[in-house]
Image 1 (tube, one colour):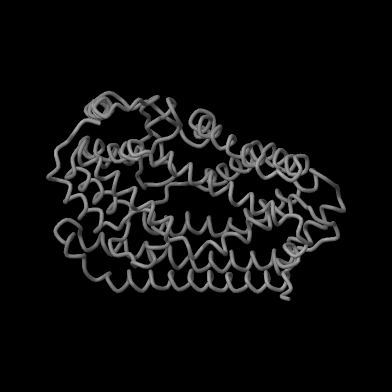
Image 2: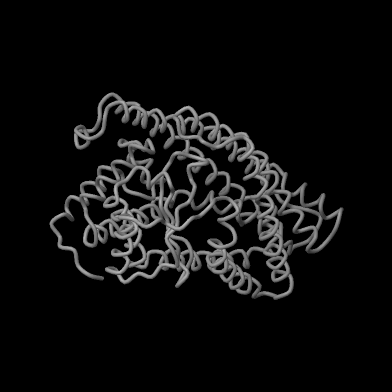
Length: 427
């Protein structure tokens, strides 16, 4: 009979090797493909995208992908060190000797958070102050970078500490059905964040001002009325203090939804193009994409917590992943960390499913925008955003299959052109 400890170790190593090989191969393909098409603008965009802009996007994409190799290797090394290398077990043993119960578990989780933050810091710095600066996107100062880091750490403590304590307490106090209680609490916590983020969290990092009166606001208000959409406010965010990239997004939930535009976006697009971009975002709400994704997330988390509930008392689960300590199972914090460290390794080959679902939703939102605003204006806005954000027009298809939540520029433009003949209809 096969030893379950050895079987899990072998399965984990096989999944780890496969995941690492795929990541490296996809990154290499992306670099090679983008470089191969750098010399000429794709025919579909030749009349509207300058060669210099196309080459800038290619160079930016390649720089980011090359930095990605370091991130891939760093993440892989850290994962092996923590699991089969015994790092997580050593850390758990250390905290067990210093304290016990909820205190030891919380200390273990936050020490890992601190470790990952410190390891990621040099790469985050390099991305911001080397790659983004090299291509003219960085507007962040060193003091702002450090201030953001400090706020993020304090926010992690303010929100993460009560969350961690509550989850660990539920795991210890609720018997065999702890996973159901944890899931209910975690789901409620995430829903609460949707309400408090716009009012209490986002203003810690950015300034939000009401969208001023003018053609843009008039167009947006008419679009909202036409689509029967109620918003809690239209705001402009000072995204330009960190980056020259432009964007727009919805935040909040239910009747407390806010529409937020980066100031950089408003500077670059015409009122008609901004209306079309917003119509695309409204399409996600009209098609209930947000609710569907939340339902999928909550369903997945329920399944994963149930699975952890079946593994938490099994000694081979800890031993097979290199996390055996002197304490007998169940070890709530250790089990939680170990499970969610190992899970992405087994799930990575299935990434194209999530990316495909997301790209399908983008097409549906584009179709909605074409009906309620202007397909031509959205096409022009997309091309402008691709150009200004240096997004490559020639991504590797397989890399996109795994990583890209949005269709490629060529696919989106072709889809929009097919929508141009459709008449705008009320919601």
